[in-house]
Length: 182
Image (cartoon, rainbow, N blue to C red):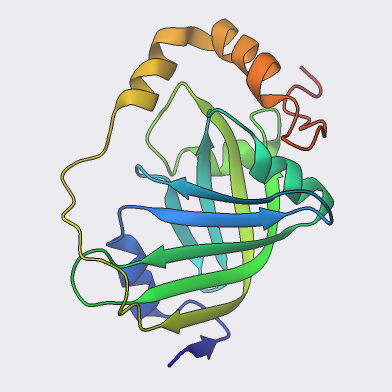
């Protein structure tokens, strides 16, 4: 049975620390709902009601775009190894780009990556755990290095060009503001 909590407990933090991936869900008032899988060493619990994650350059930029209109976000972790559990964090999110002071405040928490695109900071208003009994058991082998390797080969100018071509407009045709002020 699902249980609700007002904050991230120490037990929840340990669970989060042991997960190799998480899922981020966002939506604007209209258009597509976006669910993105995230991996690598890209998630940190700052305190019992604040988390940040490092958003790397990818094929789209939906999460950041959705947050500009409706800052609601759900983050979900599920155990693919060990004891079953699903943990959801509900709250509101802010997006920080390399041009923002807050980006600099948090980027040192993560491994350096040429594809650094945004830092997302979420204020957690509710935590929910549920059984996860139907989540399959899967063995973790290793992180893929393809994205980080690709980003390292691009360099800043080619990353910026990629953002302009692939990340500046959302699926629903909204400006992502990734290049604002550049």
